Length: 212
Image (cartoon, rainbow, N blue to C red; front, side):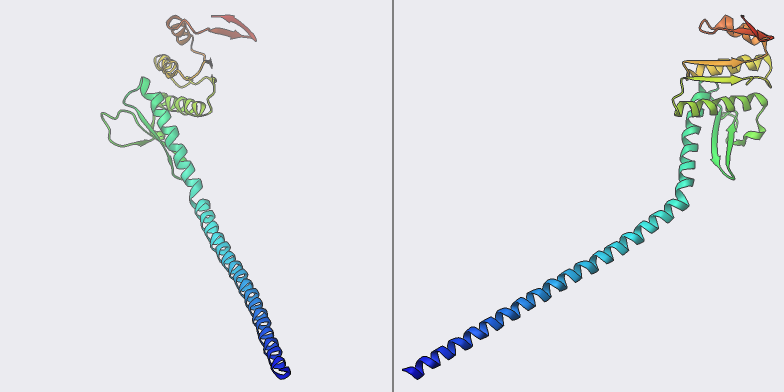
């Protein structure tokens, strides 16, 4: 009986030892698997970060190369559209276009009924240049939502007849709550004063001004 008991105890000790060893091995395996998983996550993060970096780099390169041009072209299109809306109230068949080409160039068509192509604005008459110049200023003012404008001798190169047309054009544009104009053409002032009740005219001489 004593020998049998010893064998039973010995067998139980071996079983216990084997189970403990198996448990320790499992713990080691679990730790190793955990570390491998952590390492895999780090590798995936590094790969993801590298891919993100490469993507960001590509985006930056694309934006650096193309975004400025895109913005300029987009702005030119917006301003051209506003200018045409302003101009065509008074001159329905005139058309302008801002183009990015060695800077910003302005092209125009004086009469879309007669011509099918745009011309460089350098070929404009003095009056047409002034109309385009006013339209451009008005377009920028509309973008910034300005309530008033100041024009200094915008009709200096125009005849009396065209000067009157210019101010009619400016008034028809109806963009500003008020605008201030300096001109040396008295006949133009007289005409405008008689045509519009919402205009005040003053004559300035030697630092003194009197109501016209």
